[in-house]
Length: 478
Image 1 (cartoon, rainbow, N blue to C red):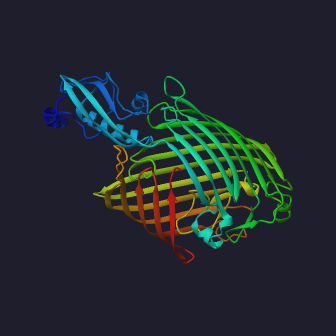
Image 2: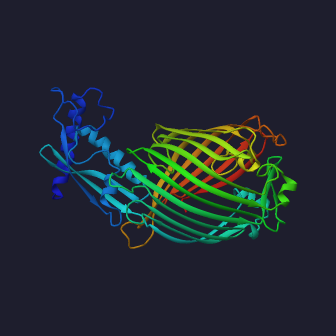
Image 3: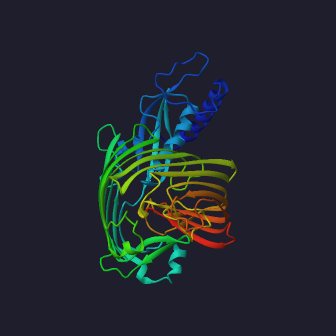
C-alpha cells in the first residue's frame, strides 16, 4: 500500500464508523465477533477480516500473536466492532509481557475485505542477572535489623522468557547468603496445536540457619543459634488450560518435605504441629483466573478476579483446606483520573493450624498500607483497598542505544490517595493485639511505572495506632 493512500483509508474508516454508529442501535457497546451473526436489512453491510500482517516478531511465533486476537481471518464484523477489537488486541498482546510496544491498525480495504496490520517491538528475553536482596519482608524490617549485610541473599538468577518463541519461560536461580536456595522452573502455556493446554514443572531447595519460630506483639520472632537450621524440598507439576482470551485454569500437584532444628520445639511446640521436627505432605490445588484489564501489572481500568481451592496434607497434624479469592475493579473517572477497588479473602479449615500455616497480613502482597511494620497471623482474613489516582506525567527518556526496540525508556507518574480496611481471625494466638479486630489505614502516595513492569511505590501512610511513616515498595518480575 502506498503512503499516499493511508490518509484516504483513515478518512474512509472514520466515515464508515460514523455511518455504522448512526444506523446501528446500541452500537456504543462493542458486540462479540461472530461470523454467523444474522444480518438485518437495516444494518450496513459487514466487512470480512482479510489478511493479518504481523511485523517485528523476530522471536515470537506468529500463531502465538494471533492467539491473543479477538478476531481471525474470515470473521464477519462491523467497523465499530473492529475498532473496539483493535484495542482489545493491543491490550491482550501487551499483557503477554513479550512486547514493549504494540500497534494494531487497519492496513487496507479490498472491497468489503479489511486487512489488519500488527506492529510489535519485542522485549529482551534473556536475563542472566546477579541477585542481591534483603531477606526481610520490606525495607522497614531490614532497617530494624540495622541493615545488616548478614541478612542479604546474593547469587545468580537466569531467566529466559519466550524460550522457544511460544511465550514459555525457563528459570534457574542459584542463591546463597542468608538463605541458600536452588530453584528450577519451566513454564509452557501452549503445549498443543489448539494453544489451549499447557504445563509447568519446578523444583525448589532452600536452607536457612535462622528461623522465624513465632509471632509476638505483631512482630516476627527469630532464633539464629541453630546447628541444623531449617531445610525445605519441594517439587510440583501444573496443568494449565486457557479456553479463550481471558480465562485461565491451573491444576497443581506438589510434594513438600520440611525439616527444622529440634531447638525450635522448645520455643514453639506447634511450629509444625505437636512436637514434630519433620513434615512431608502432598498438596493439590485449583486456580481460576479471569483477566480483563488495561495493564496486568498496573491495572487502572477493567476487571481481574482469582479464586483458588487448596488441599494441603492428610496427616492429622497437617491437614488444611484453604479457599482464597481476589477481585479488582478499576474505573476511569475522568481525564487522567482513576479509581480502583480491590478485595481479598482467605479462610483455612480447620481453624486449629500449626504455626507455619497461619501467615496472613504482612507476607507477600497481602498487607495493609500503613501496617507494613507488623505481621498478623490467623486462619481467616478479609482485606479491601480503595485507591484514587491522578496521572501527573507521561514521558520518555532516550537510551542512546542504536535499537529499534529499546531506544527510549517510558515513564508514567501518578499521584495517589488510598484507604485500606482489614480483619484477621485467629483462634489461638491472642498475644497479638491486631488480630480479631477491624484495622484501618490510609495515606498519600506516588507511583512510578516504567518498562519491563518495574513499579516503584512511595507511600506516606498512617494507621489507627496513630503511627505515620514513609514506605517504599518495588515490584518487578525479576
